[in-house]
Image 1 (spheres, rainbow, N blue to C red):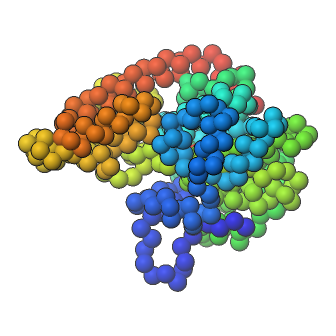
Image 2 (cartoon, protein in one colour; image 1 turned 90 degrees about the vertical axis):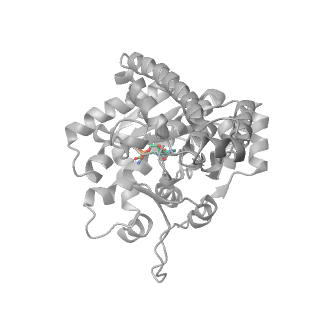
Image 3 (cartoon, rainbow, N blue to C red; image 1 turned 60 degrees about the vertical axis):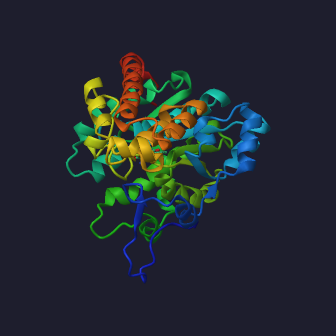
Length: 382
Ligand code: TYM
């Protein structure tokens, strides 16, 4: 079994960072996370191979938003040999979609476009029903539909995209989940996910369901079709289990490519649907989005005079990171912004207003495509 980040029970210090599929807390030290999870860093050799294959590196790779991986080289090998592979990613429908969720999907769409591959997209309505006490089956059904609209609004090719609702899963998915579950002991699941005596037994089975799409393309094709999973690094525990059972099921191990966390608009923390005041939802009105951005935490000084004289600090600023990771793809613009900010050439209010304009434009375009998606969404579900 590949390593995980459970803390040493003999250590009596409280962990300053918690990263699990259900909880991300504290200041994230990505170097430490890579070591503890046992993933690899995306290095120069990977970047230059990607550059050769795609001619220009996507800004999320250039800027290290996607920073880590498992066996991504194997996918690059297949690209070079023109052998098939597919993308697999997903969403747990616990609420409306935020820009945080959309950030890895933008990169996933880019991969679909440049490599012309199919995408399997799992909506883990079962997981969210089981995990969130207050959600009913009816609630997660509605949210699954709502989130599926967001997936299509990102622009995935509907002919090459296959949505999976776990609650309405196919026979193939059901059988694969069972094959996985039979090979994972409770002791392994507890060690990887931290399950306790209070965890309901549905949650204990769920890792098998989330592993199943890793193998679905191979099962459907009747030959090896490995999956590449783009997602934030919080989902890695699932892939550890899936990679562990893959050889015993006769399937290729899934590969992963992982991003950092897109920040919330408050001081510290990822953008999360459970923190509504610091999250931008894809369904927010322009007024609501603008109000949230104008309330964002920045690296500004106490007074205008000080800011002009000493400059501000983009490295701690949620407005800067929102631009850097997602909303300002142009390198020249982002470098200018950093320079002007540090040199005291812009006040935080003005910088927030510029970001708010970009967010509102993004939302208007996304919401238009989201409405169009209603016509096709039911046909995209497996
Ligand atoms: P969920 O709904 O928590 O998250 C959906 C996707 O968004 C990523 N993510 C973020 N990425 C960047 N910044 C953030 N602030 C942020 N918040 C969430 C997650 O890593 C994920 O990629 N159990 C899963 C659903 C799932 C899945 C998958 C996810 C099923 N199969 C395969 C990824 C890949 C879940 O609840 O994701």
